Image (cartoon, rainbow over all chains, first blue to last red; front, side, top):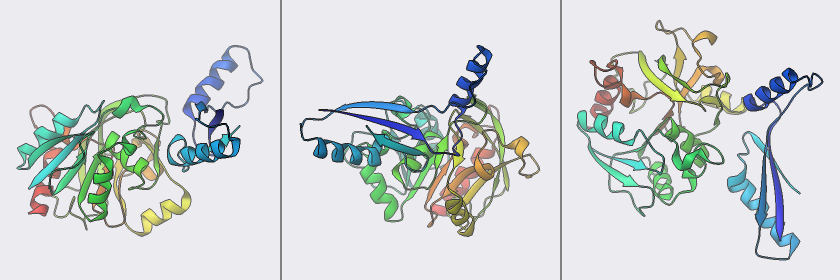
Amino acid sequence: MKVKVIVTLKEGVLDPQGKAIQQTLNGMSFSDVKEVRQGKYFDIEVNTEDEKKAKAKVEEMCKKLLANLVIENYKIL
Amino acid sequence: MKSSVIIFPGSNCDRDMDVALKKFGFKNEMVWHNDPKIPKCDLIVLPGGFSYGDYLRCGSIAAKSKIIKSVIEFANSGGLVLGICNGFQILTETGLLPGVLLQNKYQKFICKNVHVKINDKENKYFKNIKKEILELHIAHNEGNYFCSKDELKSLNDNNQIAVTYCNKNGNENENDNPNGALGNIAGIFNKNKNILGMMPHPERMIDEYLSSNDGSFFFENLIENLK
């Protein structure tokens, strides 16, 4: 089955890419954009149909590699 | 004194480091990331570059590579591990050093000479070094050191902040902080001070005709301290 993961920067962690995107959007007449935070998205195909097991494995992957918990949060969808 | 420089796919300061180490008397060996073991040595260096294309996060893939287990074992048994630039990023990703290197504050790759102040000399890297302020080169996109408030306090309390960005007189101010690093931090130690990670490249400053000579002070001193 497929498991989807989103990794985002924690609040308060500087995100220069998000800032650049926000400024560009503002310059494109999307003046309402107040803030952009950029994150990462993973589509992980796991070799099992047991959702609980698959998500537990993916959670381990998040902690060990996909996210750096000093600066990032992860969300398994 | 023997040293080992680890080469990851994408390392690009490995040969400069080899030249520098040999110039000051180390018997250096190059070690490939897929090798199972590191030869017996007194110092392991993780060089600068873009290991594994900096995919996912800088240093994150290298931190899980085959050779890293041996590096961690060596470090945990008190061996000297020096990580420069991408090597510093790898050390934080392995957890051997606290914190993380974020993208530079001003959204630019920075390549220039900077001054750094040596904050602690009670360690093998800087004991007896002849200069307090070194002019070294930096070249990075992710050098903005960041950690939690508690971690920063712990770094300060244990004198783990090795080098900080400053002006040529040694004053640490915002103008001389090239990348937005917390507390102008350019390099840190682990608690035992056998592991040093820093963004500046001493290996690029070992020839007075090509660069400054300040990297020479670092290497000359390091080998003396290891004898």
